[in-house]
Amino acid sequence: MTERTARLHRSRWDIFCRVVDNFGDAGFCWRLARQLALEHDQQVRLWIDDPAALAALRPGAAAGASCEGVRIEAWRDDDPRLATVCVDEVADVVVGALACSVPDGYRRAMARRRPVWIDLEYLSAEAWVHTHHGLPSPKPDGLVEHFFFPGFDDATGGLLREADLLARHDAFDADARRAFLASIGAAVRPDARLASLFCYPDAPAVALLDAFAARDEGWRVLVPAGVAPSVAGHPVAVPVPFVPQADFDRLLWSCSLNFVRGEESFVRGLWAQRPMVWQAYRQAEGVHMPKVRAFVERWVEAAEPGPAAAAALARMETAWNADPADVPQALDGLIPALPALRDASARWARANAARPDLAARLAEFVAGKLY
Ligand code: TRH
Image (tube, rainbow, N blue to C red; front, side, top):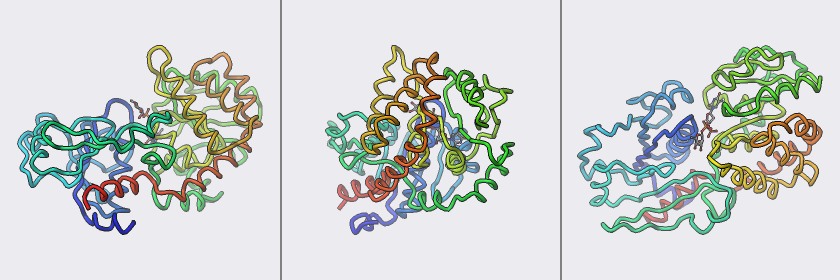
């Protein structure tokens, strides 16, 4: 907490989250809300239109409940509390998360209350984010919305990272790993080489598991429930439950290689300090591929795993996202590069942990608008 953010003491925040699909929106908003409450001592309400998506990530986080300092509210368009809103009910800080708009009734009351208003955008690795981060967007009624872009460097809003994350990672030793794997019922031999698989339904998951099996190195792949039903019963697949968000980190830490999907688990994969292969949410006509390349290039540029490891990772990313026939060869190229990628991941995480994370940068930004 800086001198300026200390002045935010117990400010009221309303974060609005619309779940478009899957878990990323709820997962990101929950992490942010929780960190603002626990690490920055803010009073946070999280308005979410699909509380069930949140409950899968944080058991007990039901509408009307207070969890870890965050009040969770079901956001329904017909909610009378949001149709007619008194000025006093508007928070000091209003966040439209992942570019969602604030409900109309609330928005009308904002014009009189004049809170700090943030449009919190999706994570992007593309360069234009630098020129858009922090920009004001004045409205006809005099209110000003500010764009806040997550990102990979100091010219952006940064990445979410809990204050104790790296310490928890470092304390996760062999005993903790064994206990965790037992707690999720992962039936694996102690000498198994572990990977995890979190992917979209169109991923070439069977081809990947066949390629692991063909290497005959004792690889086993942990597959959370509901992910990749096509690999059920595969000799390399190890079914595990879909775990709460806090255990998802432990799952990543337990493996030597993680396959992750979506922005939220990309960031968790980075902090896990393990090599990872990322699958982007598929969009028509392959428009997601520049995004994949940008994410990988951005990370490679910062982490410097060396040209051979970087090339092996890039080939695997292309195979996994767009060229399934190349998955076996790409995996064969990736496995020898794992030690270099792991070292680079650890270097990257250490260097970045010295910088403020997204919640801290957002608090600082807001404090700068309020004081
Ligand atoms: O669920 P996603 O595919 O979400 C995506 C992205 O957010 C994308 O931007 C959006 O456009 C699209 O949905 C509609 O992947 P993501 O972002 O990685 O979020 C997954 C969350 O689920 C993350 O917080 C980790 C969590 N998780 C668990 O907590 N436990 C688990 O067992 C697993 C597999 C995931």
